[in-house]
Image (cartoon, rainbow, N blue to C red):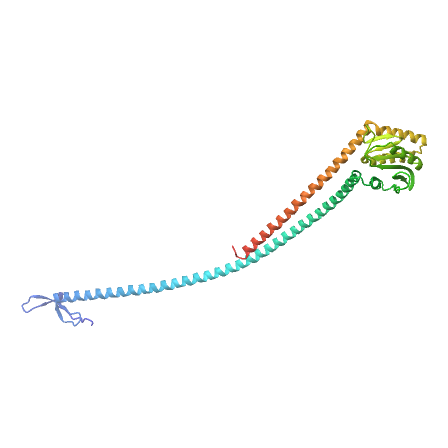
Length: 361
């Protein structure tokens, strides 16, 4: 209700019947005159109502603000959560793509490394096989040659037909000459070596092989007789038994008596003498003189020392060959062990890569 404004007297005062000044105020609602006390009470009450109304309005505003703030915070939180979920999904998607790309790259790299390792291992194995085959062939050849020589020596010691062994050694040592073995039952030496030059026989050497426990002078006399019958330039008796006080090399009755180890070297020296006599067209007297000089050299300390050096060197070479065979066998065993170790490590390496790629770790 709106207060009604009424005219008031000057200074807001009214004069009573007695002429005294009385304070009058109009009622803010109806305009009726009010006493000052009443007016103050009304004003106080209105002020309280206004204050209460303002307080209620303020509380309403605060409540509304709080609700709006809560609503906005909820919206913001929901937006943040949605944005976070979207970001997580996007990140997970990117990580999945990255993981897939990395897995593909790792798989390709592993495949390439496997192929490279397999190729390298294959090449290494092939190279090792080739090297092994070459070494094996070389060693088998050397071993066969050594066995042949050892068997040749063993033939004398075991009492096998010595002339067969002698014939084989001479054939192997002088492939360009004619080395013939006289058949059993026919008179003559055991082996005849015909020296060939320009497809023509220019001289010969006769040889007998004896493997008796005791020496007999008949060995040299018989061979000397065979030499004269055949017309050979030289005669050599290969024997393991010598006259008393003699060893390795001896000259008796125009026949050279030698141990089997020296026969091939002696034949080579005598063969060279025959070739030189043929080249220089020496007569019989000159040939005999040269033969005497050759015999003197062979039986001299210098010649004997050279033969000993030759034999020592030959034995050292045979020992070296045997040691080399043994060493190669050891290396082959070690190489096989290393190849097995490489295969085991490679298999373990591939298993670890497969486990890592498969997500086991």
